[in-house]
Each structure stands twice: as structure tokens, then as C-alpha cells.
Image 1 (cartoon, helix red, strand yellow):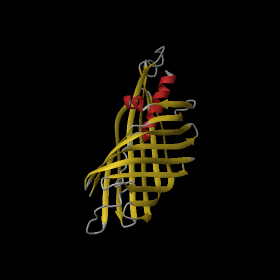
Image 2 (cartoon, one colour):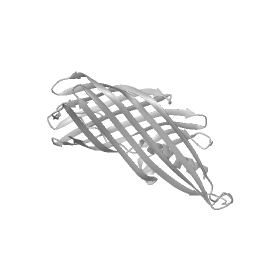
Image 3 (cartoon, helix red, strand yellow):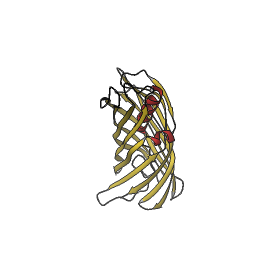
Image 4 (tube, rainbow, N blue to C red):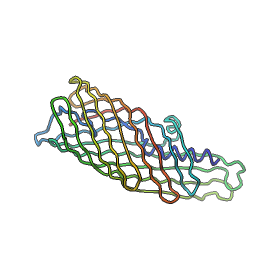
Length: 263
């Protein structure tokens, strides 16, 4: 039961990032396109719900249990996913930009116990949130390319609950949680190959509550209309956090798909 429970816990933690992520396109919130139609006030806006089909590998520990190594594929994580929502947004005025990225997931799993004396089965549920808010400035821009320097804060919050059913511990539960903030800096860029096809990507690194927090991505996008783009790419995100018996030292990576709306 312990090994399976820990594996479920790992999947839970994985979804934290795995809400799964939708790629950002050249005009997306994280990496806006060079050629955007501006409003009368000079502002441009982008919004992108996204899907990130990421697996998870690393070390996790909660509830005072020993640290365990986890290696879960996206399909394994998806089997335990109850709910997930992710979105990226950006507001830009000339060379200046404000960027936001939010991920929320809820995962659960249940396993029976060998003897069924203390409990017939144990259920684990976990809610995880990761939100980034930052500002950027274009250090280079021409008719086909843009390079922004970006800085901001990422808030992490993980809360897991163990519930016991049957046996002596029937109806009992225990909660373990952690919340921390990391500062991140880096670059994001775009390059238009044609008026419809473009490349985009970003790289961020930092620390704070975690010893290390990093995020890199690369994608190719296609603009179907002036205000709608689709993107596909690959993203990797890692965080190394530990506090007492709570450990979350993982790398999550996988393909991305996204739909970006511009207005």
C-alpha cells in the first residue's frame, strides 16, 4: 500500500505543474507576437487556456513519510486527475508588458490495505496551485522578431489530505501542506518565419522559498486569423523545495498544445 500510495502522491504533486500546459504562441501571453493590432489606447491583450501533457520525475515526501523517488508518465497522472485549469494572460504597451500564468489541479487516488485492520482502504487527494505574475521589457525588436527580458514572482501552494475508511481509523483524516514564493528572471522571444507561422519560447530561472525554480519552453505557432492562433511545442519546468518533512523536488516536462486569443 505504501508504494502505491507514494506513487499516487507523486502523481498528485506532478499535476501541480501538470495541470498540463498550453503552449504560448508568438502572440501569446508569455511570448506575444511582434505584429499585434493595438487598441486606441495603445494596449494589446492576449489570453490562452492551455494543455501541458507532462510527465513527472523527482523526489517527494509528505505526511512524515520517507522521501520517495517518483517517475510517472502523463497517462499515469491523468488517471488520477479530477480537475485541472490553466491559463496565460498578457497586457502589453509598447515595449512594456505584464504577464500572468496560472495552473490549478486536483488529483485523487485510493488503495486498499493488506490486512484491513487499521483501515480497509486509504484515499489521497491533493490540490495544487502555481501562479506567476511578472513584468517584461523589449530589449530588441524589429519587423520579425522580439526579445523581452522578464522578471516576476511565482507562488506555489500544495495541500494533500489522507482519509481512512473502515477499520480502527475509519473516518479519520490528516492534511499536509506547503506554500512558498520564488523570484524568477529570464527572457522570452518570438520570431516570425512567415506572416502566419512563427517560433516562440522562453527561459526563466530563480529561487526563494525553493532552492531552485526554472521554466523553459519552445513552440511553433500558426495564426488562423488576426485574433486567433494555435501553437504546439515542448515545455520543461523544475522546482526544488524542502521544508522539514515536506519535499517537492521534481522536474515536469512534456508536449504542449495551446489556443491563443488576442484582443
